[in-house]
Image (cartoon, rainbow over the protein chains, first blue to last red):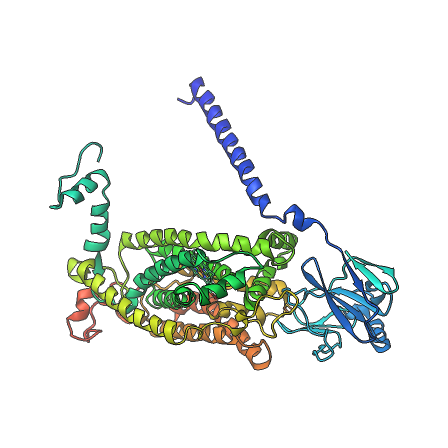
Length: 175
Length: 421
Ligand code: HEM
Ligand code: FES
């Protein structure tokens, strides 16, 4: 049977049909999967301009940027000192304080816990700020310091710094 | 079968007409009329029927809710409030649906624990068990997505925390999460697709339930003694005996669930979900639905993101391989004097895990969760595979009818050791 040249021909036809079918199905599935990714209008990066002139030293405000809360804090002398004094080798996600700010007193962070996405406490003066005097995430107990770096708890990374720039002394553009 | 019609057997000519063209009448007769049930089965064997009925109730109440629900972040919360206040009997539909989901889990948990206690997952019912775990998994996904729909604070933050679990996966995690959400945070795209999936998944569940039941009917149902059916004397017909028994169970269940729906409809709900979702404020204390809480406790017991996620998924995945972890040949725990207590402790432990999963993960609660986690995995990975080396099972009865000879549950005279290995 195996010697019959017709069989070889048939094997070839069968194999190429199956291959074509498989490639075709994969190509068919692709647009469906792709359609679930963020749409163009969602992708279009939003920017937010914030007036920071009314923020007093030691106070913070929360603004919304691309659906997420952004923390803007005017740090006190002691908070800046604390943030700089840390030996970065002790950190889970080592980063210098200077690399996380553009002007020492202004700290700008995406206020989303890097563990599972809760918004940490510490923005209001009455909030608990955690053991490192920055932010405390109540969901599973992550503590962030005055530079927004993770110090204790399950979160793996520091609170991210969003892209931003100072338009002038009293206005920040986020995004 | 080809061209060779079966002899006509029904008096009713309409039934014959259908049967001749599509033999479903004889199929139902075989599976739900003549089907031999072991005669020693207790009421725990009614929970499969109860689960099926509850699934139907959820599907029907869900379709009617969907007629008035709007899956948009600006309108979802209000549309649910409108269902509660303005739609005729809307409150009833919603309370049937939300409490129905909770009872669905209670029933399925009892159903699963029944299977574990009586060893129903063992040969030849492994595939039946796997399909069951698959149903359970689909149920969790469906209920999770349903809980997002009312768009309250718990909906939003529960969805945020759970979808963020995927971001723990190295390399592809962030991309996968964004793909699931259709956005960088839980948003309108997410709500919309969750609604679409919440609508369709119950029908997938229904299909898998069909396979699950078909699989058990091949070799017949297990029973409290865990021994095989040997003769016709061991069984009773499904109709009318089991149909009547399951109907009584359904009536009792109906009374219980009605009591909750009418007198305590929010007993199993979270107050925070009556506050509209706010992406800028996390509630002080995020609680999962109680029926998912044991797994949430496991997640939080580990102080590492990836580790917690792996153990949580692992705790569900391990259920799939239970038939191969248990190496004892004796099915029913009634005849396993040591394992029996470990299984019962497993049930208690699962309950405790659920309890601490709804409390803050601190201090004593965290410690309890960690002990519970160790027992959960220890049970599956150490006790279940190795206990048969030290356990001497009680002697099994030769057949189901022998159980009734002595009048008691276990006959005083040893009835044979044949099946003990
Ligand atoms: C396996 C079956 C199902 C389960 C376990 C389930 C579970 C749930 C849960 C837990 C909720 C949230 C209840 C609340 O807190 O208000 C919910 C809501 C909802 N479900 Fe289902 N469901 C099922 C089937 C269905 C089906 C088939 C539909 C049909 C479209 C549906 C439509 C809805 C709608 C519209 C809501 C939002 C209204 C509301 O919150 O009451 N469900 N579901
Ligand atoms: S989300 Fe912040 S600690 Fe888990």
